[in-house]
Length: 283
Ligand SMILES: Nc1ncnc2c1ncn2[C@@H]1O[C@H](COP(=O)(O)OP(=O)(O)OP(=O)(O)O)[C@@H](O)[C@H]1O
Ligand SMILES: O=P(O)(O)OC[C@H]1O[C@H](OP(=O)(O)OP(=O)(O)O)[C@H](O)[C@@H]1O
Ligand SMILES: [Mg+2]
Image 1 (tube, protein in one colour):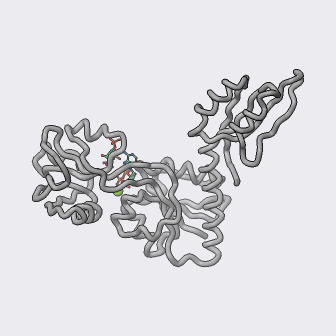
Image 2 (tube, rainbow, N blue to C red; image 1 turned 180 degrees about the horizontal axis):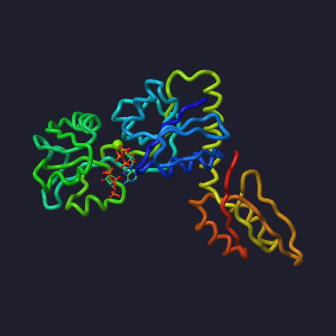
Image 3 (cartoon, rainbow, N blue to C red; image 1 turned 90 degrees about the horizontal axis):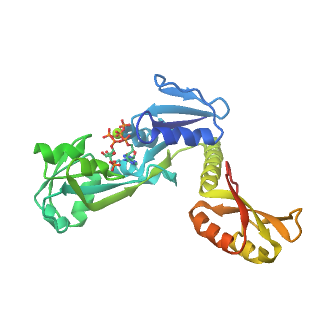
């Protein structure tokens, strides 16, 4: 049995639950129940505050956890990371009131800074030879300058809307983060085997999300060009159409390259291009 700790409610919760479900693991969940057992995989899921997850995993109370690298690093738990999961991408940044002069991090010398990440920020400031007064608060950090609590802040930024809405300007990136899977250091051989199975499934799900299945019709004369554009996993599947001189091509294309490749496919005469999502992809 493996015990996996995920965030109870917050920015990581939905994507964590979705990833577990996409791995084919079923379980019942209700917002009142803080522990549930999967029905088709030896997994127990604990719903916790995200700040507590690195400690629980370090101590072996939970075997696995899903947490942001920002929280993990703040808790000195980077060694627990087994895999980056690609969601909840954000950055920990320094910001100052929009009208304030700012040249470099040296501008913060002797200033007061509000943050929920005193360890990460302290390390960053020390590396830049800056001494500042840190005020540790656990949330709504962006309010601090406007109520006279601090002259600058250091908090999580994603779209930048919270900074904008509070009259602040992002000036330095202290740390880049995404959600990660972490594991306790003393898993048994059986638990390691289960973790391998879980990671295998997670990787298949993530790979599938990065790729699309593509089907198109092309004149036979364009086949070499189409094959060059759509090499697929091994090579594309090519079948003749009922109409002479035409073929149907099926392949896999990376989401990031899709629009660029599609315009090139059209340029060489491809028609009727269909694109389908892939559910799982095993290399
Ligand atoms: N705006 C954002 N966009 C993307 N990811 C974010 C954003 N804000 C936070 N995160 C990531 O999600 C994690 C959880 O954020 P959230 O705001 O839900 O934490 P919290 O309020 O501390 O939750 P908890 O109540 O569990 O302590 C953060 O540690 C960070 O890794
Ligand atoms: O750059 P943005 O897209 O505006 O996101 C940044 C905000 O998101 C997070 O807070 P959240 O909304 O999760 O609320 P919380 O303070 O309750 O954690 C973070 O603490 C920032 O305040
Ligand atoms: Mg928290």
